[in-house]
Image (cartoon, rainbow, N blue to C red; front, side, top):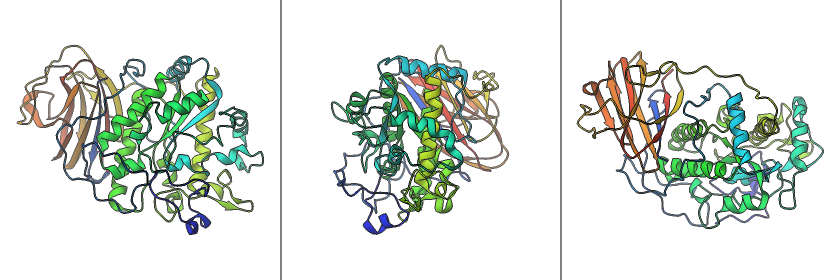
Length: 477
């Protein structure tokens, strides 16, 4: 993640910074629609950042560049063939901490694991920044003396992975080559072999716990993060490893950083749903804790200090008032759910009802509430083109339409993320899904304020071939 901890912080209920570690130097579109009262206006940059130095990021970073820049070349996205999600994916409700595992999703996870039949079913990999790197992340589960409180039912899962051979140790104590202080998503697959590939080759795991985003906020390029984060997930799937994705914590160190967190978490959630892999909404749970479960720096989680000293694996009521203890509980719960279905257990969650509508302009998908996520594949011929907005490009390809009802005047921000070589534009229509009803069009970011009424968000392919799309909608309470 971001900063080094001081010795004074280590004595308090702040994150562990082990002293022995020196500071470590398809086409697809994601669309996030954010309404002002629920998500503060934010500044973004599409420029790819220069590679950082070996030191962690500065505690006082410069503000992200304002405005939205034209399309700029970024690292090429991984091909989507093997990683592609279903055409009508299961939606991930915002009122759940663990995303559902329905029968279809259980079959998908087994399909991912089947790509690598030699993977160790009792080994997981850790991929991320300093929260993943920290000694307080899972390491204490290697010890047999644990205080699990009412979570004693997790002991069989804890013991199962304790027996796993992670290159000579267990996966809890394994010092991952793909988890480093100060890292952002782009670094995970950099180099040849990349840190992720070195870790997967060393462990042959069946599951990978992934958390990035906090340092990416400091870079200030949301599209850059989305591209590289998606690459990580696709790469793991292609290697036959089931990714388990964690949303990031709140930020209380800087207002601008705090405003960015919902956007980065929307990307993380969107990628998880689009690829139909497990999501752990860490943000949803840690936000409820005293001080949001964060230490004095306002960035890293806190750790419980009990009668045995520092104890991030205490799952007692007092222990779970701390950010690392909570994260460790959520990680074991996720490992329990995923490893069970990989071993053939029935899916724990029922089939979810489908969206109303078909996505055609004449029968748009109806957004039932907010927040909302949906991902689809654009294929075939289009029926809409020649949008009346002055900024609209010709869009001869297929489109997907969503109907949105706004009860009041609303500031609307829509962010679009292209995946691969295709380009999908965003069009906002008023009253009816016809090109001459266009209110605004944009290639990547659409920001406007609209009055109450019925609107249509249309994702229309302007360039390229088959394109997958994802829509994420936030509205004010």
